Image (cartoon, rainbow, N blue to C red; front, side):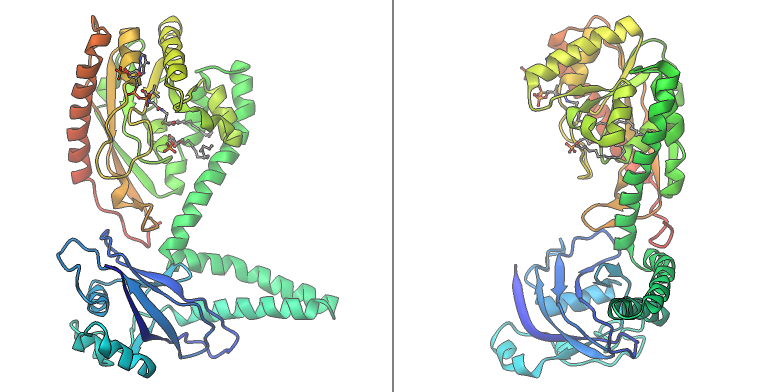
Length: 443
Ligand SMILES: CCCCCCCCCCCCCCCC(=O)SCCNC(=O)CCNC(=O)[C@H](O)C(C)(C)COP(=O)(O)OP(=O)(O)OC[C@H]1O[C@@H](n2cnc3c(N)ncnc32)[C@H](O)[C@@H]1OP(=O)(O)O
Ligand SMILES: CCCCCCCC/C=C\CCCCCCCC(=O)OC[C@@H](O)COP(=O)(O)O
């Protein structure tokens, strides 16, 4: 249900007396849990201290609790009770909000959908009445944070206005602005989980790119070119990245990786973060099958090529099949292990996607065993839609090998089914028992 409900105002107490603080209050209401409440409140405005920001409430109340037809304001009230946070330009901290009915639209609203009494009347926050919408939310965006932001904005403003007249003043205010950036960054990291989400993602990609710059000469020195042995270099360079992102791995079933000779590892694929878990358990002489687009990922692409990664064109099955048939031969000739993501794409839907057949054809062609590895669900610390990237624990479960000796292409379908069922139940099991995220503050 989409409901447009104009004429409600959020009073936004900025806590800052400067009239220069301009805010674009475009945001969405999100819960700290993982429910998709699908409720948006948006407004673009400039405001100063205690301005009332006119917003239109646009939303659909899509929880799975049978409340679809609920009035959006009642839904909003409900959300408040569930500790939702108000996000302004991506800062997801509870902001001091107050609620007031816009007189101009009163008539319009009376004609439209009925408005629940609790939401319609301005309320007073007595601090312990959880059933009403409080008039002012006391879980403030810290005042000093807003002061610093205001300082930053006014310093930027001063720089623009003074730079044309006095060079000295301009450079000192520029220094002022520069000095404001690190604490501002820290404060944003502290106060906004959305900012943390983007920051960590950008940091991850940038850091991996930098590590790859280091990896390229090291790989060339080690092997003189493309060689699976370069994966040792890559593995040791990537191992520490988990600490920087606040991630922890709990690995079980190490003994199943003690298999000699070539084998095919299959695992579920949730995100590019899988690389961290992969490097945690990567056996010697093991490389991966990857989509060919990865080779164009700058320094990371070059490193992947140097590590002997086999690139396939997923859009051309015949090409992919012949590359994988070649890989089966190389596995045997060079005693190599291959890691395949049989889902064929990233998937974070809380279950496994149906498997593609390539990995099983590969194992049968090389008569090599399959070792399934399951990564627990990332949903307890990483939510792409909700822009959450907290610290967390990932369970990696290495399952016993599945032999393929004597199998032919006829057996591929049953081999796939067997592997899928084993991995699916292991995935549900490890995801169920995985500890919850350490919270938004522990990044
Ligand atoms: C220092 C720091 C630096 C940075 C450090 C970087 C670290 C370095 C980490 C890298 C980490 C990489 C991570 C990448 C992760 C991905 O790139 S995931 C995406 C790429 N991977 C895959 O797609 C693998 C899985 N896909 C497959 O196996 C698919 O089967 C294929 C081969 C692509 C074909 O796909 P499809 O045509 O869509 O579907 P599918 O139904 O499976 O096959 C169609 C037909 O072909 C047949 N077929 C399929 N495969 C074969 C085969 N091999 N032989 C014979 N017949 C076959 C099937 O039997 C089927 O025929 P029918 O049985 O139905 O008659
Ligand atoms: C053309 C660009 C390819 C994307 C690579 C972006 C560069 C990322 C840089 C640093 C991250 C470090 C490790 C990267 C390895 C991630 C490989 C990956 O996760 O590829 C996605 C692929 O499994 C499935 O792709 P789709 O889900 O079908 O889409």
